[in-house]
Structures are given as C-alpha cells and as structure tokens.
Image (cartoon, one colour):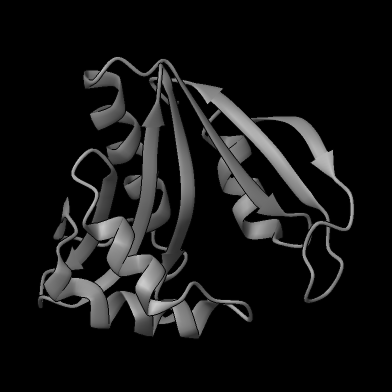
Length: 153
C-alpha cells in the first residue's frame, strides 16, 4: 500500500529539522546535524525528501553519484509512515535521477538485522555483493552490501 498523495522532491536546508527528527526516531547511531547540512550543500548529490499530502516530511534519502554508480548513503522513513512504500519510492526516485545523469548501478549497505529493509531491497532487485562482518560499532551487527542495476524493478 502506498501513501497518496506523496511528493518526492529535492531536499533543502529548510528540511534539516524534519530530517534530524526522522534520523533520531529511526537510528541508535545517527548522523550529526553538520553531516546532514554538509550533504545538503553538495549540489551534485541526490538528496530527496518524501512529503505527505499534509506537508509532513515523512522520509529522506541521501545519495551521491561517483562515475556511473549511485551510492545510497542513508535512507529513513518516519516510523508512523513506515510500511507504506515510501522507502521504495525514494529509492526509485533517486535511481531514476541518477540514471538521467548516467548512472547504471546503485549500491547500498544495510544492517543484517534490518529484515524489513532487506526484504524491500531484494524485492526491488538488489543482490548481496558482500558482507562486512561486525561492521557496526554500536552492536557488532554485520553490514550487507547490496547492489542493483538501474532502472530498479
């Protein structure tokens, strides 16, 4: 089920407060406000937010293109909006934008314990490329590196 209407647009500095709020709700180890602000100031990055019909910023994706590859740096959806297809829409929008700029593959990294995200990524055509054992310092979880050709399924 997808949330309608949903507007996906370029993230701007005015979205920083909402992005930080989502980050704190979704993660135990968070990016700093300075890191997000720096990413927002990089003109070539593909940093998108999903905005609900009532104007609420309900999710974000931050990514960068290197050569012909899109790298997803971080993606999150406000907990009250999860399981509505928003993360998939954000990924697809980032990949579509990157494809328009010449990218042909997308990479991301996910915690091995994040089953909902793993299921979404597999459904969208991502495949496991390698595993970084005990990568995350807060709990020793493995990082699963996945990639997919663009366009996504």
